[in-house]
Length: 596
Image (cartoon, rainbow, N blue to C red; front, side, top):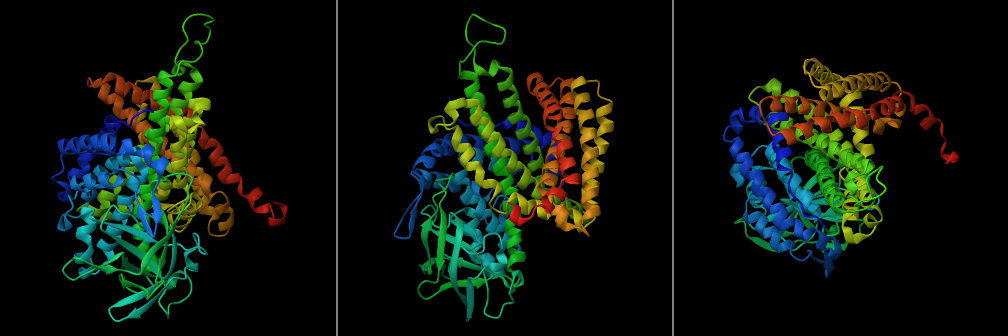
């Protein structure tokens, strides 16, 4: 079993040289963040991930969380690790200073979260959901609600969840039936919620649930949903905990992966009704919840990056130590480790190149989010918010889809040993499989991309990004490096295909949205593949400049060669995806239900 080591050099390269830490720290709200501070945070986070979280990952997968008498006991060691986690201030890394947080920008907290997820995704899901609750209450909670909940949530002394779907609803939240009846200054909530990550546990003293429910006079459909705070334990005016609220865990799911993360079925109001408090206005709950969901979708995309990185590290170390066969052309002599075999090198490079592209894409989105939140110029804030909104479904959809593929390649590199649990390779495939499903399936992300993000705005943001991609070619053209030139030629063709496919979506969405929907996932993947290639080409350009200045030869040479591999092996996928987008909807729509 390999141990996790945070890829600090690549993380620092992406933050400082690719997405531009200097642009973030130039903003007045982030002026106290320095490169030295970022290095120190990442270094300590890497130690915590490797020393505390990673050793619990395998045992947590094998033992899982346990339910008895409506109480969930976390996997051995998790409770102690969580205490270390909050004692170290990690939960409040990007939290509001007014509520005990450290106020660091997202571009710093993203690599830290990547480390947590790589080392132990099941553990990381708990603080990830808490951060989403914080984001929703920070923007839509009343002053009294913020005063009562945000400090404890920021410190991690309390955790949070979001309660959306129900057994009959699935992804169709218009079918939510949970009820909330007004009663003085609160509501009585009754209903059942499913798939509640860390919905019950013993790691924190209280859990703050955000729950979607309908008031008695609410209209049908999504327009009739409201959002409520329902704490596990009631909170007194002085901040102390009162009696247990009428919410309990009735079961935890037996899942393919992330066994140490309890996914709960929660029953509200089996006795006298759970006490809940309205967030914002009635019937605007889904709008508010989307704040949390978009925050979570970016986090889930990062989970894809993290698990792909962990699967790559595991496969790489196995390939370096597994002795099998002789080098091609050798009929005698010592046998070699499998990393010497060309096809194994190809598979490892397929993992490595995509992980680096995915990381660059996710961190770029986080940098845009920081600018959307903190840039002093309103026009820049709005431009970057549009960029964040556009990128979130791509980060969530593409990074998770590729993570599943990358984890599967990791199993393949292990051969038959990958298919047995003892080597640990299978866990990453099992754990990552949920990431394409929760917080909105890839199909839902793709529908959001072709609809709200391209169709409704007639491709304005999409074509603005494509224009930026095309401007990179001028910079690549002056570099006298054959590897960079290879990246340039393939990128130009891929961007042209992306532009053609995007125009097809813009042209067809108004009169034939079904045709666009039929090829929406290939369109999302096309955007991921090409955006990844664009960022890898940018990385090659930066690395070439660093080499000229006497930088680390091995790291920067590897960065350039990885970009070339991406251009030659991954970017050509754009041809098939673009063809599928512009010419593939007819066969989907022509097939009748009876013909299946």
